[in-house]
Length: 436
Image (cartoon, rainbow, N blue to C red; front, side, top):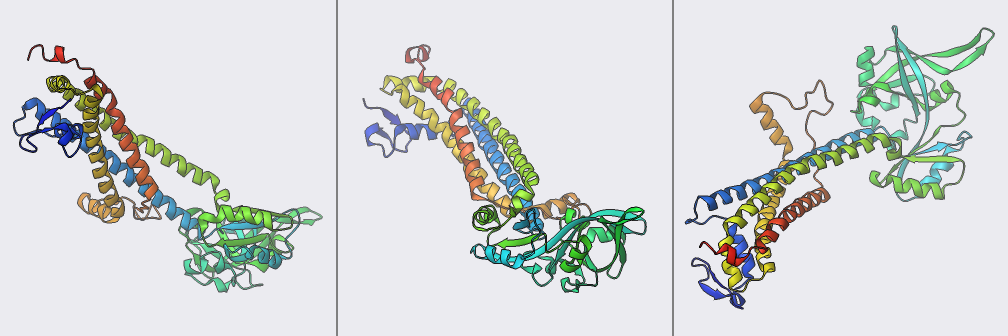
């Protein structure tokens, strides 16, 4: 059969076989916009179509922007956390680690390991002018510690090299210094849990310490509870023979779990090996759950736009029943009619997705200037400096997120075309043209 399509001066009258593209595509694209001679009903359908495009675009843009900001926060916190933590820790098992240089040498045989340093770790109580705080004491080697942590760059006052053996000097976090009103030169008392046995019972051991440096890692937990001292002083304080373990840094922190698994199979001895993701498993699991829930919630915006698309297509099918009947009488098959309305709905969905991706990417890449503009117009701070450590909205745009969001929007748009298109293919020409 030959189908003659009148295209208002675009092609004239051409057989379907001679058209440069399938006639279903041309008619479907033509239905997405109202012509100059269209009536109120066609204009309203085009208005609903524009709303569907805007809804899908806003949903896609919002989802890309929100996920990019969440990725940025996760990356910022992770980087600040790893400026204090090591990528991998090799801990002593049942016996103390007395020959840590050989352990470090075994680890350095892995090409992914770029640095290492020994440490002594323990918990204690800190007392100053009646205030008592629990702290995590970490004994470090000031010469080797820069290979695994960034304390040297985070020092606000003092230097890492001021932690000299035998002087029992300590470096504390800025939050702890502010809470206890401490500064360089302040004296404080450390109460070790390993007590001394006396005829009167177990007496806790006390040691007076001197603050020689103050650091700011940018992570509240460590700035308020971590205390650094020389590794020799920490070994004496906690009565440790050797060291608690060795801290390692890898070339790529995201590859640390794989490298830790490799070291567990290649290193010998009674050792416990863990990476940074295992040490903070609960926090990272909570962030991933938040991202999934945010993805689901914001996808509902696109689902609402898809419902608008269904309404628009149903109205179009109702309005175009006579056109459908004429096409059927000229030889169009039900599948061809269905493809026409699938093209119409898919074009609206793809246009909305494309606009949303462009808008979302632009917002994610320029979230800083946009936030500054909003703050200047409305006169408030999104992240006040006195409350949050990060006073700006970080953004980390990732291609897999953009692809997943765009793909989800396209799937929703295509799924919303199936029922109206099926309804169009079921129109009976005789009934549709009865009163024409």
